[in-house]
Image (cartoon, rainbow, N blue to C red; front, side, top):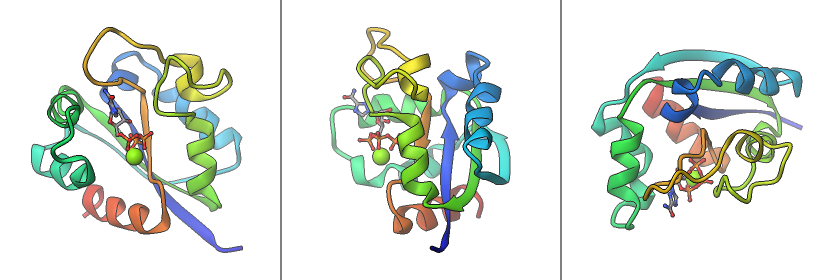
Length: 138
Ligand code: RTP
Ligand code: MG
């Protein structure tokens, strides 16, 4: 088993609702380690790189507007199988139907907006994690 690193973002909705502590507590309680952490309001260029795979989709511009609307907490989290493990902690993308017990399922819901405000981001593969950590912690 090799130790992995993943990029976690507490999105602007999570920071604004004062849920950063509750979200980080779940990561730590699961046994993962916080390796790096910073609070930043992301530049558009950072978000364009981060969300390159979604360019052209209907939610792309609303997503970039939302993600640059306020501070985000960017975290590098370390642990065995942490990439899969954090996505399991986060729950599925749609916060209205994400399972109770997950971050999105417990704290999120729809707010009648174009973009899904779902509190957190987590890298989805080893390649994405290394790419995203390079973007946020250049
Ligand atoms: P993430 O990348 O943030 O960890 O979330 P994810 O893999 O579960 O979702 P993904 O498909 O990569 O989409 C990225 C983010 O875009 C927003 N979104 N809104 N309105 C919509 O239908 C819609 N679809 C996606 C969400 O904030 C999602 O996390
Ligand atoms: Mg994704």
